[in-house]
Image 1 (cartoon, helix red, strand yellow):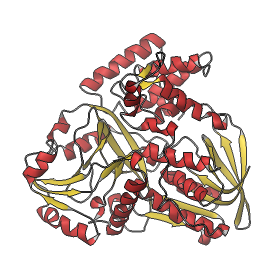
Image 2 (tube, one colour):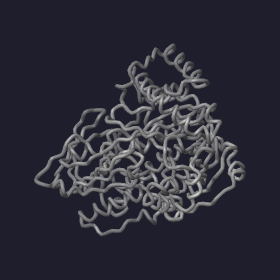
Image 3 (cartoon, one colour):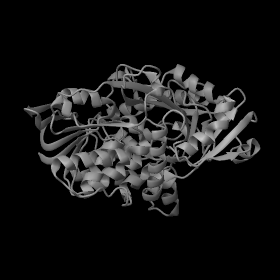
Image 4 (cartoon, one colour):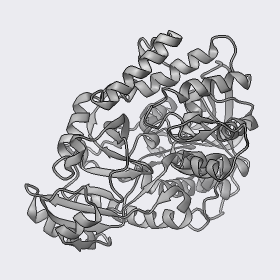
Length: 521
């Protein structure tokens, strides 16, 4: 296979680079070892930062967030809910920091409006009556899955290729130039050789490993963050604790739910990332002072992601490491055509892609300008099902008699699942159940796959996608992934739901999960 640019990593940065380069007329192949947003891009708050969180610790990152947030609101509004946000402090928080917050924002060029405590509580009734200071900011929520899917969809439309479940295992090198990459399809074991003029390493937390494979070097830190999903939406706006960044200080609305997070725990390995009970407790304990109902609300799931951070040589907490991004040309490693982009944030992914594409085009001799700063992100029809509430709106407006619901919690019909399945046929592939769940709301409702998992399995048998025990294996994989996010929050109603699911899947199908460490992604 021959291409101008091989991009490694299918997160929001990698897909953003593919779109940017495709719009400049550059042919790309994007290789992802697992699936879209399988790493940090799928394990975050879904927060489109106003920048307020970083005005004290990282003003440069705060200014980048503000500018990129405004661009995305203008060019990709279908991926964003412009909720607005509130920073609020309660008794016991640093009064001086709360008073100076407006000054910090002004220095970074951010808009922040002071609110009276009663006014803030009227806007968001979940806030504690112990609030003594509050500011309104321009935070929003963003659908990271649709953002990546739409970026990749346009890149493919313009001629790029997406190799899903294809892992880079080595490089061929002549002097300082990489002549080809060796890849393996993880499902079939088939080897693929890709010749590229430039290789872009956008592998997220695996960027250090990938650079080492190419003969380069990056000193990486891995900071795990755990987040919780509430059963229902608790606030209209993003709510931040008015204090320097710490654990459990943000509640982000995500459609019909809210997302609480996050922690920062240094990890040395990337092969078993999952939320812990201690992190779950810490998130709730830290935020319950500002939002008391968090102590009794039902949580349907917890999940964890890893922030890839580049070591700066300074000591201190991982919270003090810059959330800015790092772009490396690897000249000091003697590599002529290898580029790494890592760290950064979801909010600044477009800027990261632009800067990376600029460097790539410089090496290719391409002079076409970046268009992602001015051109709207097109909406791909098959990518719309990640948005909460879309499927029921479309289904209730009118549907065929046979278009039954596969997922009743999120009201996902057969027609939506079929559209997603058919979108894979362009590359001759077929999705597994987890891939369908990543591109829709299947499994994300209050039952967490207890019933929709069975219905989806049956539908895929009817379509001829499974034979023999393949469907049961896929169902075990599907509910196993959901189980990873439930076992750290098993109390109250969620415990009852888990016991019902165990009765159904173990009693009816004999699907003991066993050791999920070995489950295929």
